[in-house]
Length: 147
Image (cartoon, rainbow, N blue to C red; front, side, top):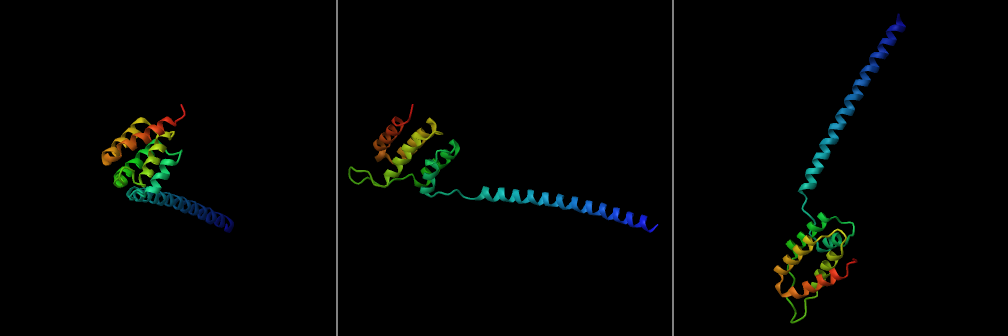
């Protein structure tokens, strides 16, 4: 009689332990989902990095997607679109950065005509004095593409 009582007690404890383990996994799964949801909202609220060097690194990265290129170029136009005034007939030395961006965009494997044309128009609209230099940079970039 004592052995049957002992076996019933052990079986009861095993069942209780199984229920507790099930509840533990269930609650940890819910916590993970809550943490993931909080992370998603936190990353959505972060403002994009608008550092020109960071944006150039995105543009120069051959693995950047078309969407990343488009977003990076929009941020360049929005926050760094104005180039300093010309120095007489010469372009300001900072314009070399924009020429490099134009050249890189024209050669990037994931670019398309819409991205190039939009960036060209916006940069030309913000800097009418540099229109000729912008067109020259785009021409050089397009001519350097492998066909």
